[in-house]
Amino acid sequence: MTQPTTAQYYTDLPAAELIAQIDRLKQEKNAVILAHNYQIPEIQDLADFTGDSLGLSVEASKTDADLIVFCGVHFMAESAKILSPGKMVLLPHLGAGCSLADSITPESLDDWKQDYPDHTVVTYVNSTAEVKAESDICCTSANAVSVVRSLDNDKVLFTPDRNLGRWVAEQVPEKEVVIYDGACPTHDVLRAASVERTRDEFPEAVIIAHPECRQDVVEIAHEVCSTTGMLKAVEKYPDAKSFIIATENGMLHQLKARFPHQEFMAADGCIGCRLHCPYMKMTGLQDVYFSLLEQRFAIELDDEVIEGARRSLERMMAVPRDD
Ligand code: 13P
Image 1: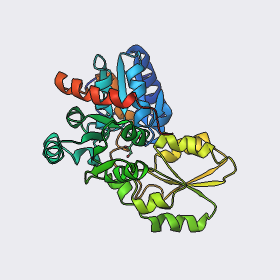
Image 2: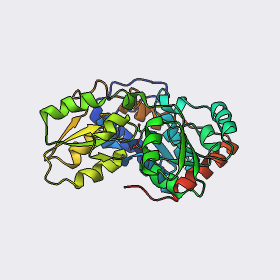
Image 3: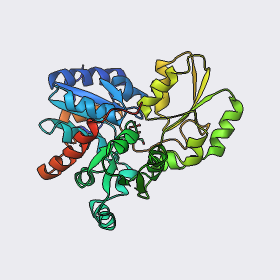
Image 4: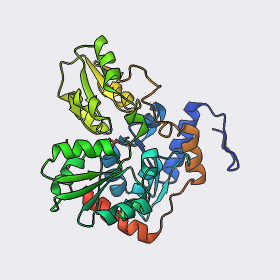
């Protein structure tokens, strides 16, 4: 195997050799590779663990590796750092951000909190570490309903995703849930009319939607759940031939791999166009390779931010999953 120099930022090593080098570096550095269900197939296949935001947080908090290479987006790698502050956490591609997380800043949360001093702040993990540190508790799409139900307070501020917030408020009508006006552009773009057009071709298909989808989409879905929840949901329909999946199209890879005898379609009827998060697709094999080789890009957070954000994340992790 050729040993590239550290000055290189590009290598023309073929994929198979890159994977072999990644494996070697992983052993050498006692690293673990975590990947979100939306990553490109090569990265999902390479990872030691692939999952949803909650599963990845749990995995990051209990790993005994020295180095965590996080193939996802920035806020996810931050959560891993918050939960394992003594470890080095690397985000292989610095451009892998999240528009939803960027839609709320500590300042805008602070302003909002002033108007609702008696409310408990529930923050979706798709947020920065600083925003988590200013929140009372976090949630993911896998436990948002249980998190809100678990609160003693009946008044809740839910941030930043308005679609998830609305879904939670519907499930927990006994609480007053005030919702921030943020959304994930990848999910928010999907309309029921597009899903129905896909369903016209497969009238028997089971529709599974992520709660970041708009209300019209969620209303026609048979199941609404997190990305890993989708894998569990499929198991409930052993006789179903086809499924329409309303979330980022990376999810299709896990579903097809786990259930090879069933058919999975992107809800917009068009793999790779609308249900496509450009940030989730930024990380390639080369990025993971250079990340391990040069220990880049390390997540750094202030101790005070880690402490505050960790409190919110740990409270969340004490609540069981919805699914
Ligand atoms: P999950 O936690 O369901 O995987 O969702 C993560 C996400 O970022 C959705 O846009």
